[in-house]
Length: 333
Image (cartoon, rainbow, N blue to C red):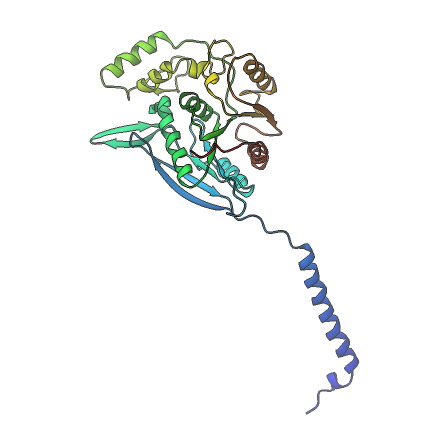
């Protein structure tokens, strides 16, 4: 049997075969020349730590590739009403890991509006904005630092976002932990709050706590939909200058004088209600006149960023990574 369509024009068949082969070759060359470099491998891991007073906190580790990892880890502490898996925190953690900085995003007992932090026999220990004790976060941070050092890191950078800034700065001023090689204040307030606690609510809180009713919620006449428990209110009142004027804008011998590691602070350009470039200048000028304090102070404005940095997570990560290059782990003992 013959196939006239093929035998009649062999030159045409050869031309088609060569054209197909050439197309494939060019396509292969194009794939080689336009292939993007492989991004550094980043892994995510859910982890847990237990504090010295028996509270279990959850978190996530965003790990850098072993061949690019820094000996310094970043510990990111959440703000008010938030938690370790807030999408912005996850993105920043992954961006930092891609730049060689393994990052731990960790809960403290203050995560979310309320939580059951622990059970002690039949007694529950509540946490969160309604019931948690802010001053006890030092135990949470100590547990996360122990965890990082246990993973083989030589030092850590503590980053506190928003209300988390209060936690990290209070921790370092109280402990002077030499494993903390840098402190980053992410959109934390610097302006002092010199208004004393409402005396009537303070008296009510003391009475309830004294009667063992610290979990009872106190009404707020100025903000009817805003509550905290009597125990939380009293704890905040007792934090004094640590909460109201940590940087000593109007207070002598402020807690910041007991922080000696480098300090980085920033705001987003779109969060003027929280802080501005003028606030950062106030911070620097205040620290310059104090007799002691951070060994170095750097400030930056994160362009086009609001309070949660959405869409600008890579910029935040790059800011931390650039600053961390100059940080030195403590010498081994």
